[in-house]
Length: 221
Image 1: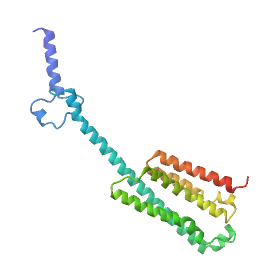
Image 2 (image 1 turned 90 degrees about the vertical axis):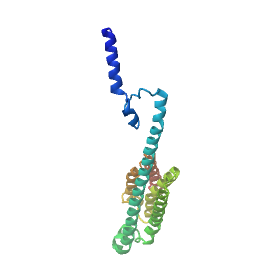
Image 3 (image 1 turned 120 degrees about the vertical axis):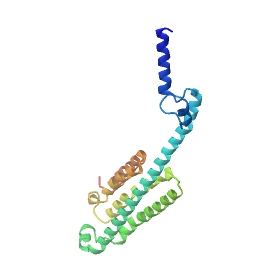
Image 4 (image 1 turned 135 degrees about the vertical axis):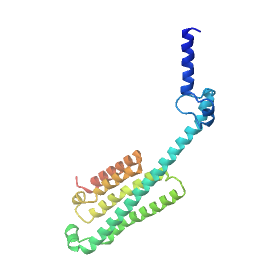
């Protein structure tokens, strides 16, 4: 045997023992690891053996991401419902208790029914949306994508309704320097919990367009 033949034989045996499972190790192995296939397995058989595993892993990641999006959406709706409920309670209480302040800020004061009629429907809507989302999660079903865009549109309309209502009670220029426009910022920040770039972009676009329309409509040119 020549030296070259001896080297070829040695390298070949080292490769087989290093990268291939043989004997009892092959029988006990659940699946091949690494980038090399078993010595007695063809390329097609090896690829087909890995296909169901790859598909199962992808489905598992997709399901985990879907559930995480639903949990994040649930947290967002819960936080928003609490914020709106607190806002409604504070405004109604202020309209009833702080009568002197409301008379200085608003022409002839402000009726306690005004915040109730302006904010109350949005609180009720948010509670219903939260209940619906919980039901969908219990059924292990997604929140419809078109429904999420419609939900963002309805929620982001609340500051616009408040701005328009207050503009009838006080100087419109003062309304835009008051607290209602800051609500747009809260909705945009909370939209990040939707874990969807396009929904956050949609929320910001709706807020910008509505405030621009109100500014052209209510403010004198």
